[in-house]
Image (cartoon, rainbow, N blue to C red; front, side, top):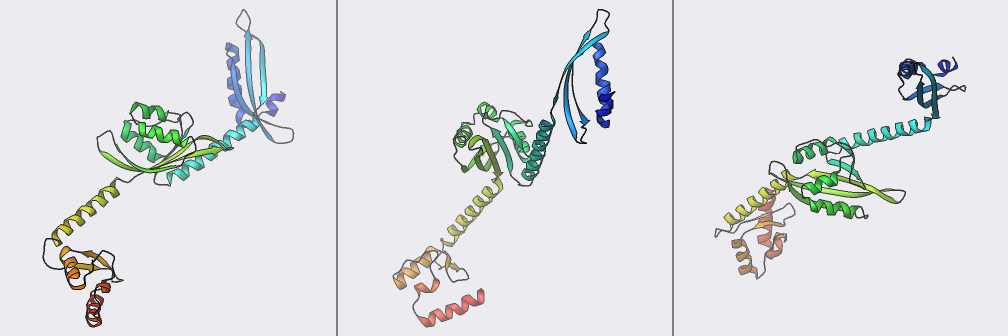
Length: 277
């Protein structure tokens, strides 16, 4: 038949199998390719409604056909665009996701899925309502941030949360509005776990505090300089020494030779410092 001549060879067998269901009175929705007389491939969507006689035999079929080639092409482009976007998101190293205006997940990377599981104990699904999840977990601060982003505000800030194990996690978050045709259609979000760096910074500050406590608990004048001879560290004994001999207040960042005007002494100190540096 003409239909068999037109249908794409890769779709012929599948379409034949589906058409067999008509004998059972089942309504069919099928999509297949045909070869146009100009040689191009077109996608056709058919809705076929069978009518069975009293004996149960197929006596009539009614149907509607429409060309959905452009729809198929558009959907293919969207899937390819999403695949490209997801590939980029996987290479950011951050937890990244986007929401539509109703708060439903549009796209997210594996980092986000892992973080979501860490806080909820389950993996996220596309079109999950993320804002509903925030309400359930009492994350009112995040809800306000998303609402602000939907008004066009660009948000970047540091925050901290407790995961489902009760551990404190420090995050650097960014929430940006998404514009399509000058209309905000959703928000793009990213979150970087900064817990390790925050803890490391605290340990450094504590170590520095311990060091200052030690060097200030002595009558010896102690100081250190960088390669440009500026003071980095100085204890209280050094500050008192400078105040007594020069009448000036020594401060971190001051040039070391600023406090000593004797050129001979400065020359000697420079030789000592240069040897150490």
